[in-house]
Image 1 (tube, rainbow, N blue to C red):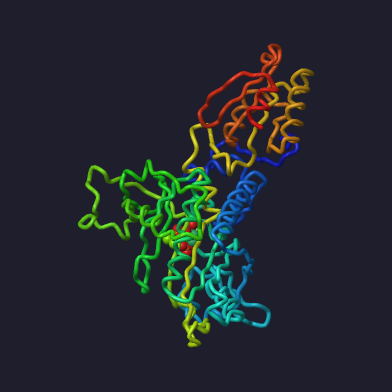
Image 2: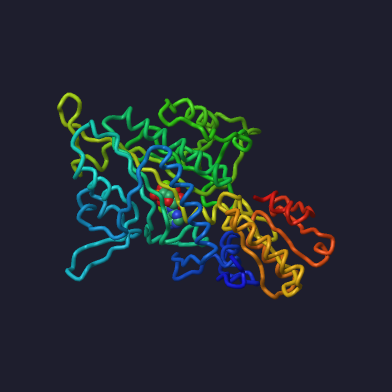
Length: 436
Ligand code: ATP
Ligand code: MG
Ligand code: MG
Ligand code: MG
């Protein structure tokens, strides 16, 4: 992509309405624009990141054994009356009437709709487990939408659901999602810590929020300091194997939000306890027969008797993650994208557009990257070097390749690692080989 033709409306000044760094940087880097309170348009650079995050989430859901569907954003109130949530949900639900005066709503979540799909088609325990997910826009009329996409009103969520014949099977589904979440966030360069969360009237210990640590987070959290140096789950995890040991090993390290943390019973010595704040990026939940019972999602069991299915739901805040990753990865100059979610891998800067040698080297590198399938954004604008370099730092692409007249005279370009700041001069060919 050529920057001269790319729609990247970066801002020089820090927007005053933005309270936290990710919100400021997303606006400054031209990633998105507010349409109305808590509702955003995604501009090209931001949309690329959103899609990368979505794809990682999708890959890991697929790997864990879930199948993707797409349910609508607009739902009928009737299903929510069946589950009893139409009245319970309160003002966070956006309620709509169609022209026939029927009650509709913009879905804040999809338990009712997915349960309806399930009960329509599945009759026997032999067809279980049921494992479906979708990635769809949700609407919640938050009292205080803020922090940009982190607490939006319209936001993109991955929500997965499981249907099983009994508790033991439901727990296996839960463990699969637990491990898939560890993998998902790790692939984005995030350390997300599973923390026991309120499991509501169901009780038990099968509700965990996945939280990334950040001073600007909305929840107060406590964890053992070992979490800070904990290793990720290996990429070759076998989802068919018993995952309980993996989950148990993880939960052996203390971590809790303020809702669950109790200094009186906390097993961690004061000196080993980290208190900080965090951002909820995912939440997994086993809720038994809360929806299947009132909505009649039953199957014939192996003995022929009807059983009500056990369900779980598993959410990831896809659009919230865009802000969350920036909170976790930025510096004074701007965003520092982890490579797997970066909008482009390479920022190629031609410092002197119009100079024959610079132009030909930059064009040759650009063609080389494109041919090698490397995502590259080339700054080919006629602009001063200072602002060009500052702009590259701001948008945070992992690698910068800088082509300038002084280097070209010596046959070299500069390759800069955005994260470490390390710069190295090398021939254009060496730069190609380094990044290909
Ligand atoms: P929160 O505590 O932040 O309000 P929640 O517990 O209400 O979130 P869930 O119902 O667990 O949210 O939804 C699953 C995921 O969707 C959350 O873990 C979060 O990452 C994301 N999410 C929830 N509300 C929002 C929002 N208003 N804006 C962006 N993402 C959100
Ligand atoms: Mg909420
Ligand atoms: Mg929450
Ligand atoms: Mg939650």
